[in-house]
Image (cartoon, rainbow, N blue to C red; front, side, top):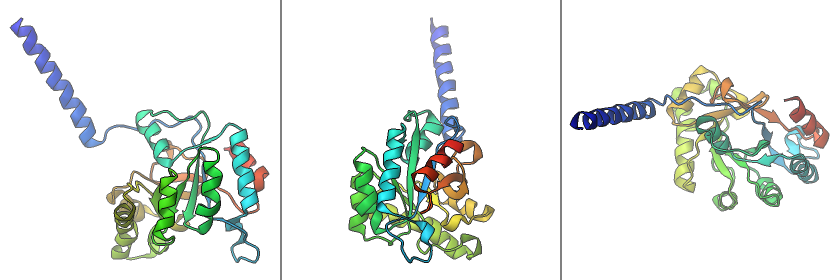
Length: 249
């Protein structure tokens, strides 16, 4: 009996060593959701008549119609964090998940997007250019279940900045968001989709779990957690254009 007990203790200790070693080295590998997950990329939800970059503006009626189309066609909005947890640990997702991400931070995120998504019981992801929206309005999004991620302080081309600014834009912006809003800010969004190996390395060092690009396509862990694709939603896309992109993804 003593020998059996000793063997059981030894086996248990060995198993604990393996498990703890795997956690310490981060050896868990993501399991991609089938066919990837569409991460929609919006900028300004508002009227852009006369705007210089008109395609960055999706009108409120068009946005509402797009969200209604998503709901009618079985999609369910989730956060990027929920998708990540599905990849790394098999956490459940809806049958047709979709992430609605909004870059920079504009009034329409709070005034239009938030109530539109809330009507369906959904939330979005704000890629916040730090200090682009007054804190009280960001906190309204957080209260509505939105995820807040970092999109730098000043939206530079990160492939053309020095080491000090690179650290500030990537690492310090995350620290600022975490302290200001008490949220994890676990994901990064490359300004204008600009990145290279040095930028990706800086994002990793800052402790992010992943990063989104402007590369067209569905997000999949197979393509790299720090170079996640998104589906651009331009102002001229309308419901039909969005539907085509999702059906071809």
